[in-house]
Image 1 (cartoon, rainbow, N blue to C red):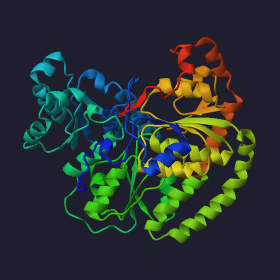
Image 2: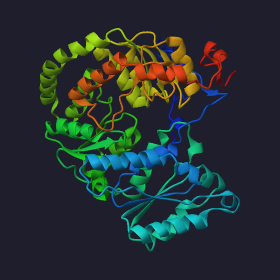
Image 3: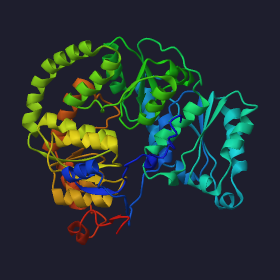
Image 4: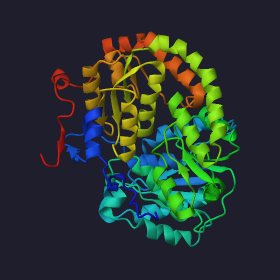
Length: 482
């Protein structure tokens, strides 16, 4: 990227992956520059950045995806592929198709002798079988460690190929922050697809970056809201195509639904092409939807129109929240999710009069600090666990904090018998003002009907000894000075 960003989020200043403690103390120490780099002496798995690179692009039309890795690396793509098929159904596609994924299936012999022949064969197969417009080639830990020259092979095949070949360097071992995978995907898009020259901005054209987890209902609602500002939405890269990708540099402004999805890319679009961007929050809940909508409206010079709309929506929505508050007020909540979504959910629950007691998020940096300071003005004295998929810490904290509700991926916490839900719904509208009502009623229904989880708790066990629940949840986090 033009700014010299490496694509690895750990390279950004004041970024922490392994951290835990009180929200007020962490925010204060960060502000004073007193937080120390640390690592976990024990880790229970991480989400790999490769899967984020793949899922960011997997729904692009007329594309083939070559994963240069052992077969297991592409195993978790199945959930993204399923989401892609569901998304087509929601969009009225009659002939639903699966993404075209080819895995080179590197084995022990390839790791010893090199896997370049398999890569060349896989890319050639994708070109001849599917005649795509785009071929994305994703690297992996295995191909990266042995040093397969992916770029040279792609450049050589490109000489005789009509399709655009795009290597995406997302070797999982390079970063413990899975959002680095989004950056790797967008860096590849910029290098190999976007035009190098600046274009005159198209009045009212807005780049709206959205990850695969955004439902079609949410897409329609967000596009409707931006349409009230006279904007034409270039919704990318989910369910997008080569033509829409090429329009990125013609936009007047950019924004993202998820705060961490395209933040680095939008910074570079501003520097390289002069496209300003709104970088605020995810539009979940009243105050977050206000903030997100007003942020993009101000860039478009439509701040007054946005404030008028917000006022109308408050008059319509706030009285209807009263009934939900009666059902949820005072309930204590533990939240686990991606950085943007977990912070947004933490602000959302205040709309229902709920109290935050614990928050798990994958990373902590300057953007997280801004969000935590924002949340500290809403909630007091809650615990933060900065962890990329460390369920052993999560269950320890949930057991100690005894929340009334768990919001996030509920596999572990459901076994405590807690009401569990999430704010990630690929079928229904959760964003914007109407989404607030759906989420509030959804959470309340779970609180009032916890029977399934209680039965699960009576018959299922967690794979941890009782001694672990009595231990400090952060005992394995050690600063480099210890």
